[in-house]
Structure formats: structure tokens, C-alpha cells
Length: 285
Image (cartoon, rainbow, N blue to C red):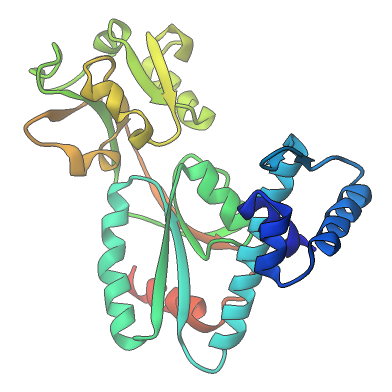
């Protein structure tokens, strides 16, 4: 029934969804009414185009996650006899991620039927998808709770600093001090665990900074920097590809750096391609 529900969501119309499913419109209408009755809530706002209630939006998200998980299970079953299929890896913008492409390339030379799915988001979102079984591996910036994971700690250090336009008043500095940060409007991470680390380094409450905006990944806030509104307080790896004539990165002083871990879910049987890749990772790293 969830497949029927997702078809209606995609088409925003019962009749069109029924056509794609090769069933009659009354049959599909009854299925959706039955689904709402079983869940005890309204899923659709009915009009010229169907739209979702808050409950409907939640169900769509969970149904899509279930589809992803079922797809991964099917792939893993298929991969038991032959190493192939999709290996999913999640990461944010980290210097440590630059280690992975060579490993992925070398592994695929041995197993040419393997493909990769790359997911980019903050460490908290990557961790959530690891816990749900939607990712095989995740590269996570510490500090983060890894009690439910096995992991390899990466050797690369992730330096903190200020990312700004070349014509920003602080762009001429070699290092950025605590005092510089107190007088500058900033875009900062919304991760609470990272904020605590920054507070410890600053020696004051995070709220005492002149915070213009919060970001979950820096790509969502770069336009603030591009327009000269607020530089980003971030790690170097998140913006290293963007440095050039228009932007500069200046590390903070005293230096603040963090480590990252390449993690996978504990007690999760890694068969097929993911299992082989894990063996390869261990040997390589």
C-alpha cells in the first residue's frame, strides 16, 4: 500500500497515479481511504491537486526510507554470489574525504561491477542514515557519539578558521584571533557538539559571538560570504575547493583542529561489495 501512496504523492492526482499503477481509480481511492483509516489521520488535502498534510509528509519520508532500505537489501542478496552493486558513503566537507577517491578507484579496479552512491550532509544527518542502515559507511567530524559504530580514525586534522571574501577587512591577516571573531558578523555551524568545542576554545558562551546565521553544511551559507554579508566560521576541508581569487581562508589562532572517523554500524553483517570494501579499507588505512 505504501507504493500506492508514493505513486499518488508523485502524481498529485488519484486518476494519474491509478494509470501508472495499472489499477482503477476507485480501487486506488479505497486504498488511500483505508490507509488513512488504519493510521487514524488525514494524509491528503484534497483539491485540484492533492497535497500532503504534516502526517502525509512524515509518511512520505518514512516510506521513501523504507524503499531505500529494501533496495539495499535486494542488492546485498544479489551481491552474495558476485561482488557488485552499490556501496553508499556519506560525508560532509572534510579534508579526510580526499583519501577516499583513490581507495574507491583501486577497489573498483578489482571489482569493476561495483558502483558508489555519495551522500553529502552534516555529520548528524550522515550518522542518522548510518543508524537507519541507509548508508554503508560515513565520514564523521568529531566530537560525535560513535558508541553504535565501529570506526577508523582518520589521520588528517580539520583546521578551523574564517572563510571570507578577499576584500573583507580581516582577509589581510595571517591568523584570526578570538577578538576578531567577537567583532565580526558570522555564519556558524548549528551542530551543538561543535559549538561546545568552540566555546571551550573561545573561553566564552557561543551566544556572545555576533552570529548572523547558522548553517548545517557550508554550501547553504556561502552566498552570505559571496555577498560580503558574513564570513563562515568553518573547517578548512569544507571550503578548500572554493579558495582562489575571490575567497580566502585564514586559520584561527591559537590553532583549533578536530579529527574525523570513518564509521560503519556495529554488528551489521557486511556481505557482498560492502563487506569486501570494508576489508579493503582496513588494509589500506
